[in-house]
Length: 243
Ligand SMILES: Nc1ncnc2c1ncn2[C@@H]1O[C@H](COP(=O)(O)OP(=O)(O)OP(=O)(O)O)[C@@H](O)[C@H]1O
Ligand SMILES: [Mg+2]
Image 1: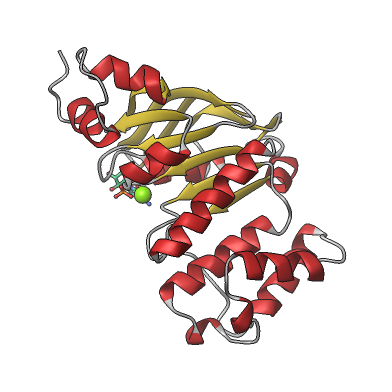
Image 2: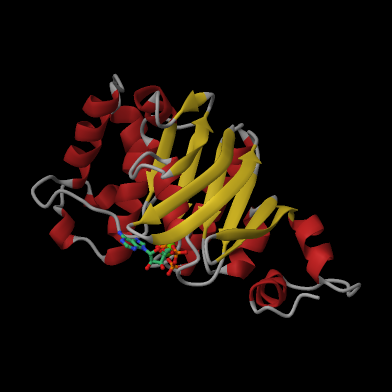
């Protein structure tokens, strides 16, 4: 469960996110969408406790990210758009390192199954320098999944993955949601979000324009038309043409 109330983030005098409230329940996948600079990454970084919010509260699985960050972080995983890896640790060593940090005992079998699920098992003994961009992303995803998080934040997780990788990632996100995980997914790949998300939240200039189930948000901007794509909804919602 993710509960966000009145979240704001200022960088100096610039307000990147203002008065944002929403909730995501276990089993739900929320698509966080908005134009470049709308505040998606800022929101996800605040929720994951990477940067402090300027105002408001965020509770992750019942734990306040500001006042109870260790408990909150134990349950969450944040997958950034540009994963940072350790130059001198191999793929397998990354997973061993993350296992130690999170206290995951007997992690080897789980690590191996994640590497196989993400199809980088054959690179287990390589350093990041010998991985392609998509493989690096997959390694970061494997590292994030190792402590079996119940709340997951994905910031553009699919860029850089090949078509099969994208389909696998989609299936893997859906399988985790079905198993009860709470997921927020930020992406510009709206046709993919449409297939994965149960809910959508549209941000524009740091403010929430709409949120709800995909059907509810679509209905609001569809002007009575049937089968309007999320891309068209996005353009109508953020392009200032809503009446
Ligand atoms: N560290 C920072 N210092 C100052 N301003 C920042 C900082 N990080 C982000 N911003 C500003 O905050 C706003 C929101 O940025 P953010 O990265 O959250 O947008 P985004 O919705 O993730 O965009 P994109 O779709 O391009 O990834 C932008 O105007 C950006 O310039
Ligand atoms: Mg971003």
